[in-house]
Length: 147
Image (cartoon, rainbow, N blue to C red; front, top):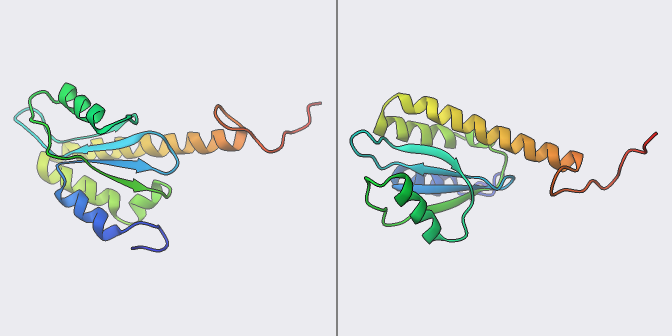
């Protein structure tokens, strides 16, 4: 367990290396990261940002709809990343994800991984800005007096 991060990096590394499908929940945003390492001819592994669901069966239905040529995975592993997404990169977690997908599906997946990382980071920045500025779903604890 990494005390600084509040996560077990070894266990996260095992999930990344072994799970066919895994979801990352982030501490700061509602969106989830879906990594599907399965592939078929013409259907390489995938990484994408997805909305949260209410149940595992909803996530299985999503996989069935988006990847109809593949059998459903035996399980979907979920872990939470409670810290800023940039720390995933700093601690090598994102590199592990990218390396696995590239090894399974080729170098084009590196661009997908970079795009998705930037998307998650942008969503996190937007959520932080909303929290600071009192955006939708947030209230500021003070307001500037209006002139």
